[in-house]
Image (tube, rainbow, N blue to C red; front, side, top):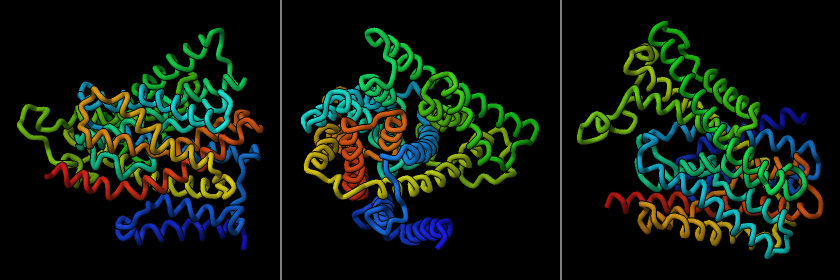
Length: 440
């Protein structure tokens, strides 16, 4: 059978299977990502051999880097669009701490696990950096239910996943520098100045300004000229590409730029269509009340133009996100080998999920407004997945290879697989009990 035909059959079959069984599958102890992961392994070299991928081949690492890059970009933009709380809202305190301080502590703890498993300092730091970001693609069950969801746990996990896929980059660059693959400068000054201060701050500023300006321009065209109607998919992809490209051209972090662009678009919508609570009323509007049932004819109304655009763009990106999840998890499954499941790698994987993440959250969030139950769930749901795979592929494609780094590759793949299985199996029942407890 020609390879192209087989690809269509495999991809189409997986999408139809998950689509038809989605409601039924939600009652089972595994996620759609777990199905894709197993399917990818069965299609890989240790299965039928349809997908022959290996990080040992430079071209394969570059392919995985590009595919995971696209998946993360789509997800980060969607995460930004989900977060409607004003930037001055205290809700933002927890995710900012978790995406910065908690992440740094996680890097140190995971690096310590790698060192105990026999890795040298630089590869151990690379392991910690690659496994430090939580995943915005695979954590949909623990994210906000809608853009007006103000639950502190769900908001914190959602925003953390959006931010730390960018804030992990300085740690990855530091590890590559210690491996001799990136210039750190005297006493690390070049790393501090360019890779930390400028790249983080510049990425956020570039993305925010482009997202805000883009949204204002589209709203103005619709209100005043009745233009740019029905082109939400083109506009969305265009904004993602422009924000990412501009950030990279200016040596800033594109992931943060895309997240900030989506966030800015949502803030424009919030400014144009504030909730009743923001106008001084006693109760907020119902979820999605401002954006439901807005037909094309309403898209130019002054009070609805921003809401219509935000809803259309979010719906489009969420559909793309599901497709990206399928592609990337199949690739991860194909890359995963049974030989990688050594005692050391399984120990690292369990240590990341059950020790490093909980300890990091416990040490850095005690003063935040999270109750004990919320803190425990936040400590557990540090899903590792597509973001970690991007950073791994990025490091390999930029020269991180050889006997010193090969154990890192296997440890990351095993950790992602274990995280997908463990967190996927516990997300739905844990969050169901959490919602019942909050209602009670």
